[in-house]
Length: 162
Figure 1 (cartoon, rainbow, N blue to C red):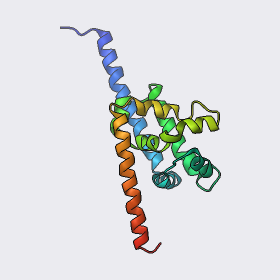
Figure 2: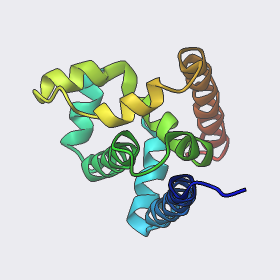
Figure 3: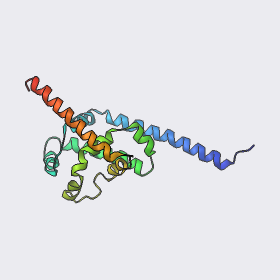
Figure 4: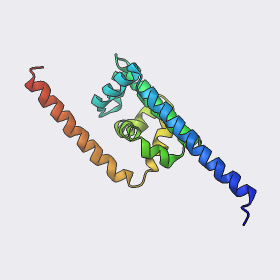
């Protein structure tokens, strides 16, 4: 029994694509380990904007670079997904931080877009996250969990006399 040549080529291309996807994902992971990026990611964990004013204060303060670095990094990574460079399912299986970053900015996203007159701000990040099944029920649970973590950190700081 012979296998059509087109079938072999298509299967080979798909398999090769997975290897390329994996390589890009590993490169994205390496970028996250860079010292300043790690600092920025750690800072974002503590950033809980309740309004666009919080974002504006951050943009005018010492953490402007941290905010911009992390948010633009994940929007760029998601652009690779929305443009087909990385398989979306594979990306979501190997990452979760983009969901966390979206969760942080989503409540103020439209206001940020209006403030900077940029309707495409975080558009790739938003697109990838919103396509995750059941995400609308996951985000409030994540926010609640992050609120508990923040309260625990505050208690620890209080106990340490800070």
